Image (cartoon, rainbow, N blue to C red; front, side, top):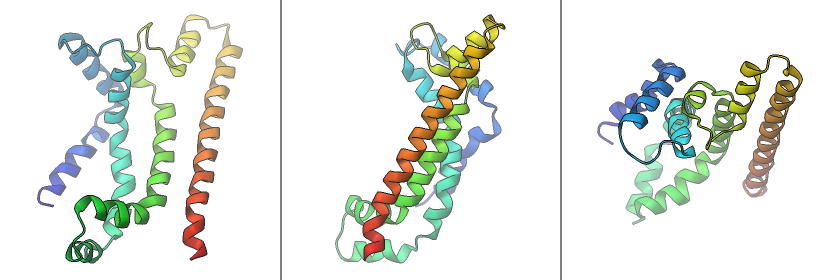
Length: 177
């Protein structure tokens, strides 16, 4: 596609910007522009997507480059639509890379605190903001903070193990052929 280098460059640009600065940018934008999103979990999701998207792009760019264009051209010659080509050729070839990238993004998102602290309000608290608030406001509650951190880590491990089992289950038909 023409301009794909520019699009990828814009996608990885947030790597050069600290996540705390991205959080300040979203804080300023959503407080000054009336969008109705301030105070919702949507603000945090948008900030995390912008913060973590470059890592996902970088993790998937290698596997995408390895897919030869002749496979896509053969699909077009056979009369397949773009959606059909993506669903029947690209997604099966990228399945393991997509699952691995999702796991990586999950790990990065679980430790991304900068934008979340700036964008969280009393109505849209997440576990990391509870941990932060307890650690800052009650220095003698280190046990509760440590337990909450372990809980967050356990949730991440359960999700990672679930995705690994899902990936293994999806790979079995390919190995059986």
